Amino acid sequence: MPHIHLETRINAPIERCFDLARSIDLHKLSTGNTQEEAIAGTISGLIGLNETVTWRAKHFRVWQKLTSKITEFERPHFFVDEMLQGAFKSIYHKHQFRQEGDVIIMTDDFHFESPLGILGNIANKLVLTNYLTNLLTERNKMIKEFAETERWREVVKNY
Image 1 (cartoon, rainbow, N blue to C red):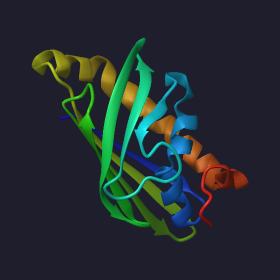
Image 2: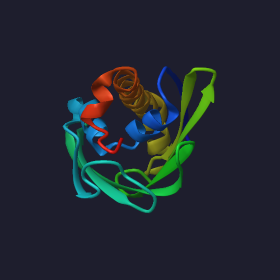
Image 3: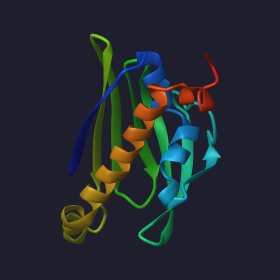
């Protein structure tokens, strides 16, 4: 099962970083290239424990749907989202936040399994791992940008 591990250093309060990472509205902004839209479940605001969201997006010129659920949640230290339905066999994404001095280390551990056995494994190596790493990296850049400026107020309204 492929594993993507990313660490992003952010100069902002841990609670702000945590909430931006679970913001449906920020996620939509960070995935403009795929025209991602939340169409069911929690479709705006902050997603929480046991809540689901269904995304509709265009990947590789094909419209796809993916439903995920927040299965673990401890604000402001970590949360986990897991795929319930979608094109993959499975997705498990753990988001962790720890403070080191004045900096927050936001860590993504993203595990995914493709369908189609050996063909899926080949697709993972040739395309999917890099594609998903780029999506997560772009999302993290936007979280950092919003957290370190006043832009966070555009998508997190509960402060």
